[in-house]
Amino acid sequence: MAPRNELWGDRQVNKGKTTQMARREFEEFLGDLMKGAEEITPAATYKGLRYRRPDGTTFGLRRSTKNGLTIDIIDSLGNPALKPGARDTLL
Image (cartoon, rainbow, N blue to C red; front, side, top):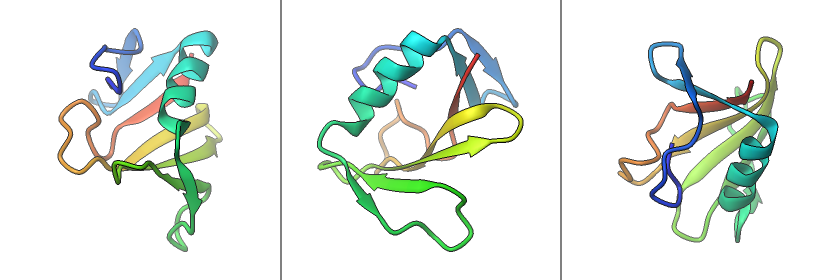
């Protein structure tokens, strides 16, 4: 993941779809994503909160029983640094 054109996280798991991060890095990443984001109604099947950034990027925040707090990239509007389906979790 790379919201500021920087790669984040140090461990790729789940066939490269999940990046695990240290708490400080995760919190900084989430803070960057949240800038200007507004909460929107999630799909009925999504078990978490969903947000839309001013640029239209949509992401979710949920608690996974396996990985804890998780960010899901839902729609990145084609941004190659934020791939849809990607997940970020705490180490």
